Image 1 (cartoon, rainbow, N blue to C red):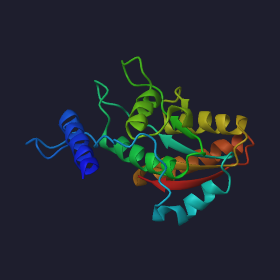
Image 2: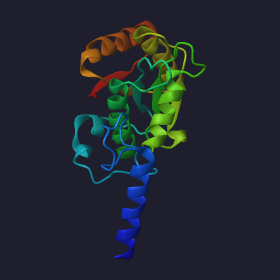
Image 3: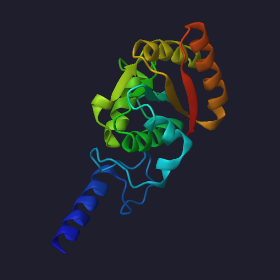
Length: 194
């Protein structure tokens, strides 16, 4: 009983600090912050999906790639990027030995890349920093693909799951496959919709 009360107190204080609780009248502006600091989610039914099986078959050679999105003027995370980070975090917890590449460069006038903002968002969702690799030079989907494929090839990858939104997925997969052909990289790409 004391443990339940302690957990409830921690959840309540976290909700009050982050503004994600029901005690505020204003709607939450950001995704709720996870209080889960790095646990592995092996009890999920998502472990038998094609993407999950794909990642488990090549722990050292298959990556999760998360594409960035333009940040707000003051570094606010757009809703489309929040959805990408939520999907990526869930996958990373289910596959703690697969590395993740966060891809995105220019953030307008801010001295921080989209990839670095995404690092913070993933850390807040319980993903350890060692699981992430940054690609922070790209300013377009074509450059996301070109630079990330170069990194994947250099790391000996043979596959990657691309995390982006549905409206963006077709173009992103096309760009990644074209970049792999151009760089003579034998990498299979799969879609993970946010």
